[in-house]
Amino acid sequence: MKFLKTFRFFILILFLTIHLPIVQAQGNRDFMRETGKINVVVGVILLIFLGIIWYLVRLDRKLTKLEYQLNDEKK
Amino acid sequence: MWWKALSVLLIIYAVVAGMLVPLKPGIIYLTPETAKTGKGPLRFQFHGYNSYYTKAESKAIRVWLQYDETQAILGQELTILNDTTLEASFYTPSMLPRESPSVMLNAIIDHPSDGVSLLPSAVELRADTAMFTTPVLDGGIDTMAFMDAVTGEYVFSRLSAKDWRQNPVENLHIVKDISFPYRNVIYESIRNTYYHVPMWFALMFMFLASVVYSVKYLRSQDGDDDRKAVAFTEAGLLFGIMGLVTGMLWAHYAWGAAWSNDIKQLMTAVALLIYLAYFILRASFDEPEKGARLAAVYNIFAFASLIPLLYIVPRMFASLHPGATGSPAFGSQDLDNTMRMVFYPSIIGFTLLGVWIAQLRYRYLKLRDKVLGIY
Image 1 (cartoon, chains in turn blue, orange):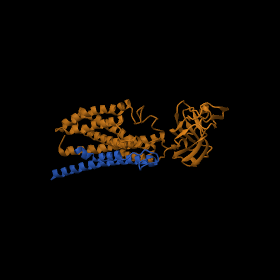
Image 2 (spheres, rainbow over the protein chains, first blue to last red):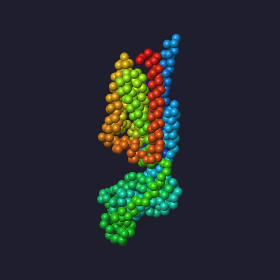
Image 3 (tube, rainbow over the protein chains, first blue to last red):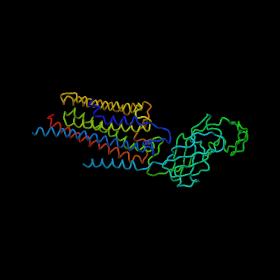
């Protein structure tokens, strides 16, 4: 279940996008479809930003672990 | 390092320019969407997007309902209601350009300062079956009369069947400015080209670098080469996941479903799983060197399967994804010159960011292996 734990963020995003209601009638527009679907672009940029941040957090944690190991060895 | 700054600058440029440059004017829809031929003029309302109809006089604007390259009806008595709405009357010939119950017509607006905008299949025009199809009174080129089968009255139509060819779409204003093309259905989300597509370019460069270092490792047995291969694979996989997720978000609003089992989506998912298995394979060996050697061989096979999975198989089946013909990123169908000015810098920016991420990962791995005392 380590896989699920690591990718829980992306799985959450997937479910969010899948379960948003699909409204295709003209004039009946939700937040993502108003003003020419510009919010889809905002969403894409946010996802990329969050993906990079997620990677940074992972690397940060690994480095912290390594620092502990180094400190233990010195003692 | 200069290239790290360059990557940040290029990405900032891609976000700012990609978001701020406006779309070209377009037509969102026409009202009514269906009409019958024959009975006098049909009045249509054109609803524009990003348009400035009031910037020109109504005489200077021309509108058409177009069937094909030679057959179209020119709109008459044009009135501009506001910047995004205009109305025009169409004297439709009672006969359709093709013998069928109905035809789909494209809407075209030619505006001196906005340029040309087109909406494919904007209106469905139906033949009026209640009318005689043969004229009972031919008043020359301009006037024709038909007898209404129901009321028995004469109905005058100003154009006859041959007049579909009288006002072909020509002498259009081609406006060159800094703007992105207007595409029906995707609208503003065409800007995703600068953020979603570079993910896949970055992924390709990362996996290419990774396979190069894997081959190098097999020849040199130098742990550094292996660590570089791991770092590049991981960066590539990160871009792959981001590309897939952003693609799903885009697909949800452009195709109607986040995951439609499209061949491109399926093959991409398979490719990413193959690369995910690379890390599982490495981790499943107790001796790091043995795992590294096997993973390097596996990486070569993974890269060899990546090319058909991403570029060959999706082209052999029908796909919703654009770019299945020709060279997707360099062809003229999906990109125009203004888009290239943002698209290519974005690719370079994200690729350099990927190298940066891979470099951080490599430095971490080197440090870790030193601490753990592995080769």
